[in-house]
Length: 78
Image (tube, rainbow, N blue to C red; front, side, top):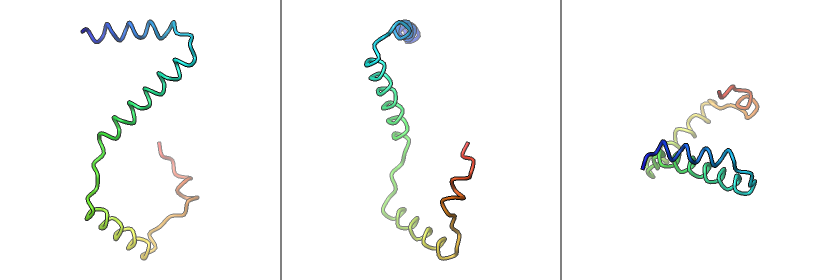
């Protein structure tokens, strides 16, 4: 199978497509694929790692190393 040729056939078909429901299904499929690709890169934490992270967070709170939601929302995340 020539992948490039198949992609071009799909693009041609997609350009002609007028079915809004089908477009919605295709968009949903794309989003699911993106989520699956993202999740496949995640590494689960062990119980020990989770406990250590919680302890570090508690220590940070005790030391006052916190930020309120307003200041976090003001940050530029791009």
